[in-house]
Image 1 (cartoon, one colour):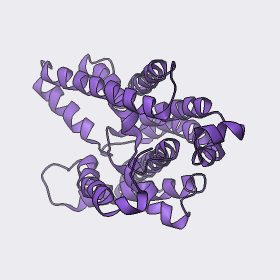
Image 2 (cartoon, one colour):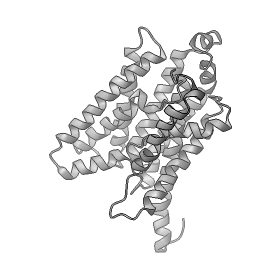
Image 3 (cartoon, one colour):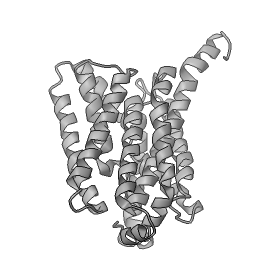
Length: 294
């Protein structure tokens, strides 16, 4: 594609796949964040409140712990997607009797905490310190050593999940008027939640399997896009994809520019940016968002 010189091979086999993965993962996480905030009507929401990232990480860590899969194996992708899907299915079952968005969120926090405990247990019981170090580094999120195989592995669920979320745009817009109003307009909050949960499980599972856990992108990206969309939940979806892709790709550039013997994980950079941003939203923009409750 780029020739046979050393520089061309590095570009084709290392740089380009890493760039594509960073753009795809960041864009998908930004879209997930916009969907989570639109569904819950909460500007502080991100996919982590549903417990999906923690469950996806648990599924993937189990496969790595028992040496059933490596970072480029379809089994790892399946385990991560399966973990996220199982988490969201449990949440919906717990909230089915008296369904509401708040019930879903509370169930998500509980299940996510349980999955995080499972990951911690796997790390503490790991008999191989080198495997434990590899799992810890992977959980921090990184695009290092990604190849065309990772692209082929992750793109189908990312595209499918993203398409489902985009199709839910009108439902998100209706939900801003309240659940009762949305029902009167012909939109089902339960159906929208189920579709969004399915899409989130595919996207979060795929991104976690291919790059590890990268936090705060889903929180920050919609806020960067919101001023250009007048807060429209449907119009904000695609700009959030662009902002998420820019965030992760920029963070990946930063980690490669920092002089270090070992490459700093991308998730560390997004956390350094995301934690102060979260505090900024809570403290300085409270008046803009009101009570910050769904």
